[in-house]
Amino acid sequence: MASREMQIIFSILATTLIGLAVATDHTIGGPSGWTVSANLRTWAAAQTFSVGDNLVFSYPTAFHDVVEVTKPEFDSCQAVNPLTTFANGNSIVPLTTPGKRYFICGSPGHCSSGMKLEVNVLPNANAVPAAPTAPIPNAVPSLSAPSPSSSVLPIQPPLLPLNPVPVLSPSSSTTPLPSSSLPLIPALSPALSPATSLPLFPGSPASTSTTSTKTVGSFPSSATGTTADLGGAPPIDSSSAVKTIVLGFGFMVAMMIHLF
Image (cartoon, rainbow, N blue to C red; front, side):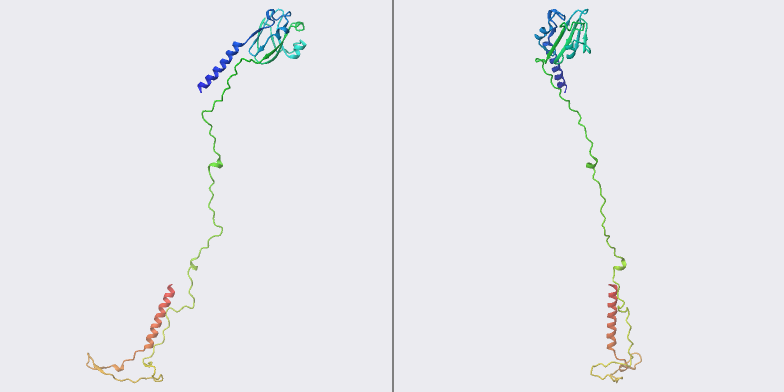
């Protein structure tokens, strides 16, 4: 960075020195100077004025001065609004820009007598153009702040179902038992009387209400020594036993249905 700045400074100095070396001081009017007797138009036509040159006006201050005017005032020899006025007897006017410049003498009657000068300034062909200054980049790049819509995404709440799921009540989870279920304890049929007995064989007549008993035999009693008559014991009722088994099985089935 420092070497770049030094190169720019050296280029400007070199341009200035070259311009000073080739600059020309033009003494207005030649040996006669800035006077009425000098043929200033003829003298100016033989000169070449360039940017960087100097115009040197030499004159007696008691009689003359130098006034820079515009083109209309130059033609009319009336310095109504003069641009610059010099009155020191040895005026030096540097030519810094190309173009035409106009000078007259402000003393009455001198401009109309020919004491006026038109100078056409040309660009300096020998001048070296100055190197363009390169922009210095920023040491630290500027950090741009992020956009609030690109950094954080909005969090949306979870969507709830529109139709709620029905919840089964505890009362509807089981199927009620019909009212016509079997009773827990079935009614027992009346016991048959000991005197009533069913026929042991199918071929026996049902109208017989009593059966004949026959003494099979007697055994001696261990306690009294008497004999016990086995023929007097009541006979076993097979239909009552079957009914009892059926009722018990029905009771178990009813209990299982109630539990499940």
